[in-house]
Image 1 (cartoon, helix red, strand yellow):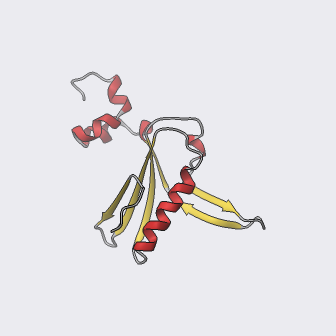
Image 2 (spheres, rainbow, N blue to C red):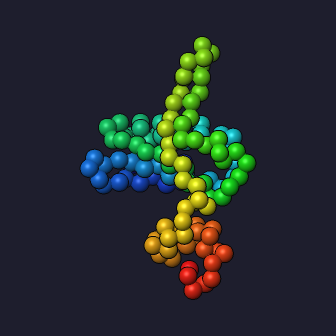
Length: 122
């Protein structure tokens, strides 16, 4: 598989299998959704017959994060939808600490709430 600029591209071996594009974001970026659309197009070019799921992992709250709804649309000159992308949004700070505690040491840095807990819990 060709290297793409997305943060992470995983092949998920389920039935049916799919490709998972993960993009980690910590700050506002006006080009974020257009870039995610580009990543998906590049992956699709190399893998025309497998499903692709895109997910944004928001690492912290930032201005405009509520505008990331899971649906990206651009309209053409005629007002009709020209570009369309569905994506998952995971706001790390909204997840319960248990999600990270179950993931072991590798996931603890993502747990904002664990920082406020006592060390014996983390």
